[in-house]
Length: 469
Image 1: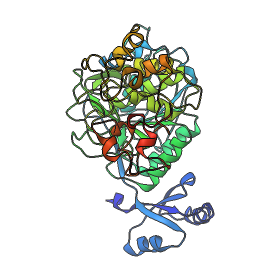
Image 2 (image 1 turned 30 degrees about the horizontal axis):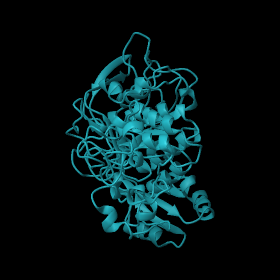
Image 3 (image 1 turned 60 degrees about the horizontal axis):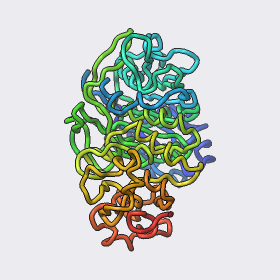
Image 4 (image 1 turned 45 degrees about the horizontal axis):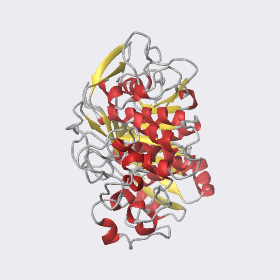
């Protein structure tokens, strides 16, 4: 199998990359170059050649260029489940969602087709407006199918004004692609001015080049969303399991984890992925299952919410999506559902209630909190009517009243707290963040240890008595 001989060679400096690129572009073994990443992709068929590149002083690393695949198991209650219709898409034209997939049927009557849709293809001889497998067109419909036209389905963003950029990475035969292709595709999304990238795809191998590329793209201000995988076990798929990417699991219409949906400590959020009806090529509609179908719900909601608060950063939007998710399964974050079901209405409400100046930390409810009268009286209950005013200072539980635990009440009593810095985690990794410290007696046991960024949990996390008040 020729795939066994595809490698990515990362050079230490731009000058060394450019020098090698000039020489290697004439070499028949060279497949492509990724200038932004200082990487050359080439075929290496012998141990001697491999060792030669590994031993060169100007080479940082050599790794295999592994396969990635589109993720759908088979053939939209989901739009209602994520409450997309509760949030206006009147300003959605300030967003551009990039869909890296199998293409886009631009002639589908239920999909945008004007100047707000652009694209490119990485498949020789195939245009981005071709979609042989239908996978990409189905994903696009969940994000952007047109509403109010008396046909078909409705997408999360339904007025036809959302900007889409399509990068065709899978051929019309539905074949696999490569890690280097995905890096190239994501960089094409960034160059097109995308705000959100959806990747309903993945592979089983962690890659240094890919991880670094997605870190860099996220740091540039783009929100990255990907499917968690369809193996139905704890295995991790990439790019979803990189920390810079929102990993999306799937639920069914009963809000149970879909049997095929992967579950692990990198799953960030869940969305509808079972029995999802959407657009397919030729003006048709089909029902598919898969985390591939869940991911565009999250990408679509991210763009929808962000369009109403365009001054927010990608990290702020990600934080709001996760902190406002509808908790499913055990209380708080868990590996089955991550933070819970993405909800456009709750994310919008959280931003609308708080609406802090640009750059200020975003308030986050204490995960899993409810008052001493029981689970009904949680932070969502306190958002209703004048419950904060009447009861916010009473009925403490887990060491806090609603005025201390709930953002809705914080905004009324000016006694709120936000984790500082926002997104902090301890030195053992991103799992051990302020949400984790809010559970059980983690603050008391570990809060004074494992400092990072000059702060322990006792200093950084509101749950532990720290944060910014």
